[in-house]
Length: 380
Image (cartoon, rainbow, N blue to C red; front, side, top):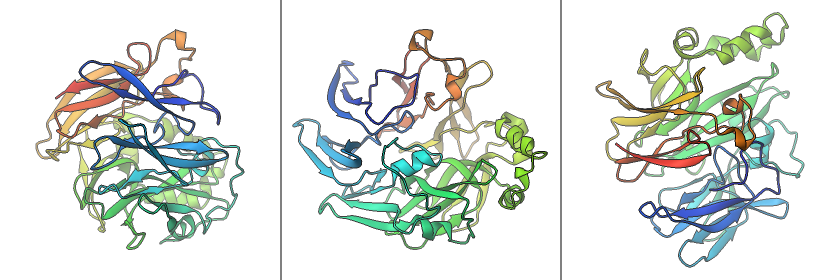
């Protein structure tokens, strides 16, 4: 995806160009445009499973949002009346969410002029199924049902569902249940369900990023802090004397945060409370883990910028504990892009977001270390 700016958040009318790149010749061809995007997850652009020449992405249609399946060779487009977040491995349907609600309540969504409901946990909003064969749009599970699952939400909280990921066989979906709390911060739960919205399960811990290792296990970065969460739900940190402690905890980094907040990479087993800590004392930072498709013992991950504005790209072996540093990349673009010194912690920042090719011998990542935001490929 290509944009004309990186120094401000996208407005409803801003367009991004969808491009096809020949990795051998490096030729770039613009094939479509979208007005439904953000800097972290784009327009949810992805290849359609089982269809080598088709992509799916989100766009705007008037005041609403749609998803589009496009044949990159013929240019033929098929539109659906709801945006998608994730596509099941068979490629016959996608799951979507209310992106304006995500944007409003603290996650990666799309700005919209549409007035969003103030209902803290609506019964008619949640995760929707977009059937690519019939075009039918169906609510799979509501925000209301998730918010009340093994939980007693407050009317002052604002809930949303995000980060939907299918397991490899498409039978289960993992997602994050996130809500804004009275103290101004956010809390979230790591959850799974069958693809039809049944058999919901709440996993332990507070997870930021995750990836399925196989059909039954997930790797994520997060923490165990049930006592702190209980205090927050009671409104303790609304006290002006204690509120600064929460702010300090949010900006802690590395080993200190790992020791105090119990943060680390965690290996979960679906539908159980089983959790195994990974890389304690070695992998010290939150990142975006991606499991190697050909050898699930290995995963690639990144870090947020250090005090010198560098991010690290790393490989880690879950069995042997072997750590391989791929590289460190400067996280501020050229001054000509019109950005400030804190750009790399802003909404517009460029996380590395590493992801594998299907063969498992190359990794693609985003970076600004050469002055502008680009995509890079590195062999492993």
